Amino acid sequence: ATLTASRFPNAAFIADSAELYGDIRIGKGASDWPQVVMRAEAAHIEVGEFTNIQDFVMIHFGAATPSIIGAYCSITHHVTVHGAKVGDHCLIVINATLMDGAVIGDNSIVAGHSIVREGSIIPANSVVAGVPAKVVAQRNNGAANKLNALAYYENGLAYAEGNERRWSEAEYRQRMAEYDAE
Image 1 (cartoon, helix red, strand yellow):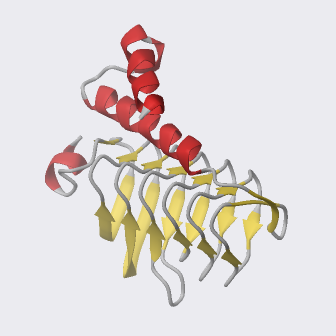
Image 2 (cartoon, one colour):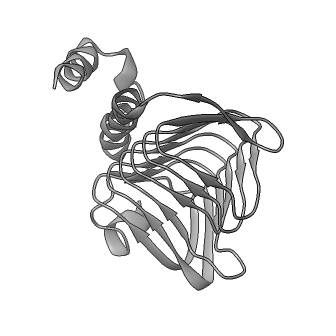
């Protein structure tokens, strides 16, 4: 994709349909999937290494805060991140919303359809759910979340080469087993 080669040479994959405007910083091995929209006209957006931003995600800066997403995260389908900070090794599940000034601690999961309100501070190793989102469990989800991010890294490399069936290949399953053993 033109965006990868010109603006984001370290990314694993950026879909042609991704719309990225303004001061956006994408880390090594990260991927942006179809219909992702990021706009950073006043503050910046930062996507950490090996993080995947999945289909239909919208990321924008907040009124007074950038949007910063750590390394080895999965920001899944239809998530909105608006001026929030996500730590490393996090999983933000389908249709969750993170509002201005919210901070999600490392190794956490935000459940689908949750709304993390403005200024909320979620401690590391949390599972949060609900509207408004509240901590419902404490456990370190870092290893599982990192493995999920690495699956998208492998898939992004394949997509960049035109292979849209990587996850169905035996070699892929072997590679993921190696990651899991590390």
